[in-house]
Figure (cartoon, rainbow, N blue to C red):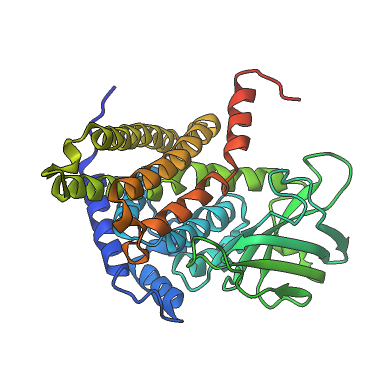
Length: 380
């Protein structure tokens, strides 16, 4: 087994890390912060990393994307912005790339890839979170359209998005084959958006609710065939779990470097605090989790890169990195002590932001259920 990393991947990581540092120069308190950040990301080519050049994208492979986004995660200190970009890349753009018709790809992908359009993914409802397919939203065939009714909530990018992949029941015949996916566009009649909802973390990831009241969606906006909702959804979550957590790995590596430097410079009892075993052990755990996370992420991306199935591996990767990110954030806070608890340090916000990582893209409990089922263990 060859563990040597392609030098071109390392160059990409370095380039995207530098771009992340540029994003940090923006004023996060500005009312136009998200728009300014998105414009920079668009100009940099970030919004279409995995989209082929045919549709105005960068044409990156999964391995290139993972190393690039790891670098971005190290450089950019805004978890909310990173989350919004990840959702656009993997949850909206990739399903259209895989399941879209030629006309749909030509219509939507160039604008998504260049960042002219912001993408969103709408599955969650007030009464169906982890039970994704227990949704109430429905779409009934009506001439050359479907009439869509229902509510979606906790939708990232919702208040500012232009294109939404929306899931709704189109049949009651089969448990999984009764859901279809639709490309819904901002401004469609009968489609209403809430204002941005406030969250305890990920402040700069816009989030809101969608309401469909007899929203007429043309048949040509169905993504895939009737009943393909499960396939479209699986594409999104597999890409999320395979690549999204590259930014989290980058954040963990940055936390480790910052904490090591602090432990070497901070003096207590006439010596650096890193000399105390209780502190050095925490740092050792942070390093160990970074190394394991890296191996898991690179393996999962390599499988994706080579066209191999990675549903189990991506669940393991998502589960481990999301929980390790919380541990890393807490260890950083504990080692920095009172100075880390100050608002201006930014360390406290990382703790709050990291907590969400065990919820989105499937909770930790869901991931453990997936792993158990792959091992032949049936759950009640």
